[in-house]
Image (cartoon, rainbow, N blue to C red; front, side, top):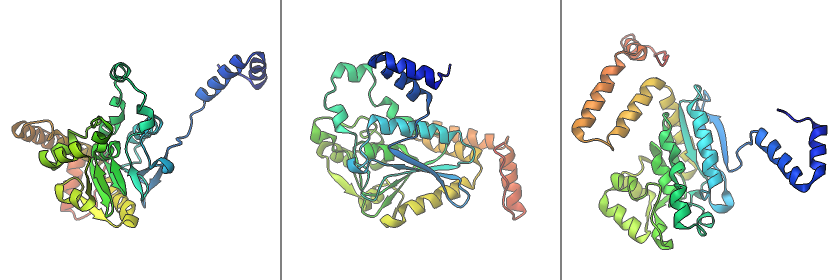
Length: 291
């Protein structure tokens, strides 16, 4: 039911409590634009989504509101057929300097455990489209974990990565002990998690945490170019390839090879596989239909 303006005014005049209720109804009925992220479509064909974390005074610290807005936007973009890839970035000073400690300092065990705190922060891994992290500046704690949830990490030459939770009496809670270890190995991951030591962008590249380094001013442009190249492929086959690569973290080599082979065989049931090979033989650009 939609309330008319006179009716709303009458309700508001009864009591302060009633006025507050009306404000809540009005707020809930209007889809609020995100306040802590910026979302735009970029690239020559506008087929890459750019999400910019936007809490500059807090160095893009990851609070519940920011992560909720990020999750909502990712879900919407995942359903948008005009988008082939998503880039997440921050500012040149900070990708994200960690979780918002002010939101956590007063928490107790029972509520933290019962409410499954941080479980809903990992929605980025559920996105079927490729997600690219463009990391400038600090990617610490939750910021490093968010970057690792993405499929590809590009970094600015002055970026730093770290899991400093040990310095405030806790441990990583969104993948820092798990994803980091799988990527850089036990020794380096253990050092970072036990000391809070940061690694430079160069060290991150050498350890396999990131795939490319660029000058800070060129980073987002290069990440978008990567997104455009991915977006030029068959969306259907891209999703299959992403799932196959991610399966390598969950399976033995034997099971993973079988999974990969089954997906490879499955591509022969698609029109895009036939179109891709036909276009190659005819020396023309393929026309994908995601069928």
